[in-house]
Image (tube, rainbow, N blue to C red):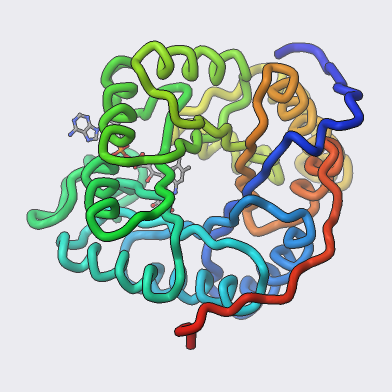
Length: 307
Ligand code: FAD
């Protein structure tokens, strides 16, 4: 992708479905900001919104609380992320059941990263699930859920090669995954090649591109080196000199993400997952550019047994 290609098809928004990812807030202030974001994104009628899950009990509780609030106070369909980190199977199964009792029907099943952070060697809990594929199987055994899994267009940093990486995705699909959501990427050719590889391996579930609007290029550049995403030189050039110019940075970020998404639309992609970082502005702008318009918000549908 090197050029700006603006699609002008008037019906473009009708074909496109979006989902939004949030992380559970740690403080009251973060909670208030997340809620403003949720309220701004709700009228865009996403297919679902997902809430990430961290290692350790405290983040698990925050994920549960955020998912419960989405269920109780909005018309949105929540998806709960879950990982296998530092927990025996019995505990993971209990969390799946607790979410199901709350009214959750959608999950993102992940292995997760070690508590020491990305890059440290992953050691499964002795009685735990070893990877995303095992967690998918556990969820399938518990209920008829919609189960998303991760996919890595530039391969997971721990995968020695693409064959191993695709093989792991295949195991997740064979165990019952219904959709893959990709790690963010900036080069659409890389995504297209990965989807082709997956199709050749007999993987036919949707592989939904995960799009990261670049709220802070410096932070993104730091993180990419750890998660295996390549930052193309042209992207670094676009943000060069904008560290202390937030307005221009935001305008450039919006243009960059719209360019990426519109190019993917032209390649036939219809579903997008946005890593919102709990911020609405860029996601709203990009959705607008792909033709998604605010809908009247339906009355909240609280789960019958929600607190
Ligand atoms: P898996 O798919 O289980 O494995 C990843 C790779 O490890 C495989 O491709 C394979 O190469 C290797 N591997 C694992 N097991 C084996 C094996 N037995 N044999 C050979 N190779 C193996 N992290 C969080 O902590 N919380 C979140 O909410 C969260 N949400 C995410 C959402 C998305 C859409 C994505 C893409 C990532 C998310 N992550 C999250 C990050 C994720 O936890 C990390 O990338 C983690 O390092 C791998 O988890 P996974 O489920 O992708 O692993």
